Image (cartoon, rainbow, N blue to C red; front, top):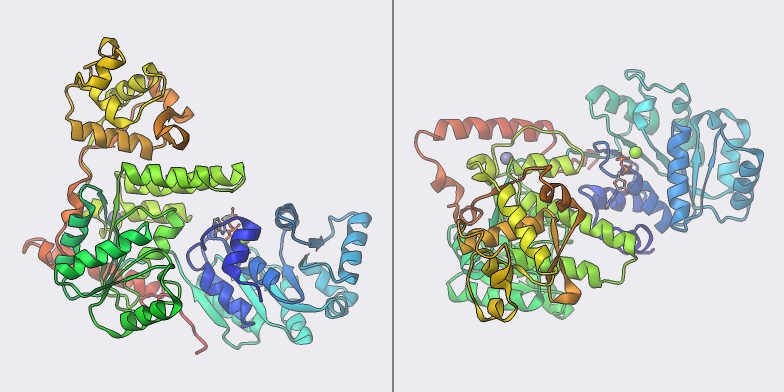
Length: 551
Ligand code: ADP
Ligand code: MG
Ligand code: ZN
């Protein structure tokens, strides 16, 4: 069978699974009866589309709305997948085309309106066509409790028995009654493999830190968590080696792991990590897929991950046992430059590159956030929530200032020098420093020369980094990282929008380990918060993280 992760990239152009998708896809691929409950926008369609494409035979998708079917069929065809739909909205020609594709065994996905199941010929048609999987979208429609009840959904159970193939059901409705009805009506009362989850992992503390001296920052973070098992993710293979070396020299048990190591060495590292208490793995993203260690207490990123999906997956390896776990993600202007140029210089088509820039922007927005990080992270995955009480910005609100004036000065320096320079030279101009380069180009005569004396060099660096993070300026890989202004900057330049930036992002990496942080007066508050989170986690099915009810 083709590898789903590869097909995800090849067919759909996505480089990572969304939270929960990988586990669900795997279960469906194995032919298990599956019930997946995931918030709206979480990416349920992919959880049956991808297995349908990787498995033999035809997948029938029962979907309640013609518009939903049309959208999905159109999107699938656009990426070269043989998909079709049978519903009352079809023309004769469309029907003929679908039947022909079925006869020739070409079709991989057939979307079917539930009414069709009342039609006598449908079941034998599906049987002849080699149907090997039934997917039920919006499965709550089988429930008489809800508003969406569709009587024809009741026939799906019959179809499953008649065809004797696995069934995968999907819904965003998580209440217990609906779930029970789905199990009774679609699965004959036998509990399928069930995935019930919101995206929140409330026991994981989220924190970002501006990259200053990354090695020292990581060493400090690790030293404050001595003896605890953790993972440090690095952007390059070379860095995993130097950083693991530095950790060992500082007296920590650390090993490195990356895709360039031979298979035997990698397996050895995985086994050691599973078995040894307190071992630290310094790794590239190659590490993690097969790792199922429940008591990883922390995950640190010495470099910015490549997307918000990647970030979620990597930090999600911590604290699977539900006990408190901590994370720290370092990021700096160089990370932004590196990730941007990786996208720009990649081989992907232009629209895919734009999407990748968008996903990077989402992560940068999280890094430069001024409100609760979890709220923002969950919001990206379509889940609404309250401030979490378990991230660095809930611990200590960001120190923000109205940076409209500074940003306008920065943009103006960038424009007046022909968008030909990076932060270093622009900051010299703004701060009125007459370097050789400044004098050589006559930049001491610019109207922006010296207008930014009120801010320190470090502060200007933070401003430029955040301007990059907000995608107001983009480093151009082909011109040594010279900044180009983006359209998003226009309203600020024209004085139509104000912008607030963080004054400091340096100190969050120096956060001491959780227990040391609690002062005596805060302790009751914190334990109340923790109890609330634990209750929340239990209500959502954590700490199991994913519930497999039929084991
Ligand atoms: P749901 O049915 O759960 O409401 P959809 O299947 O409609 O959600 O997916 C919501 C959006 O998420 C779609 O635009 C889809 O293309 C996108 N999406 C799904 N999986 C991924 C992924 N792994 N990476 C990026 N985007 C994804
Ligand atoms: Mg959907
Ligand atoms: Zn928070």
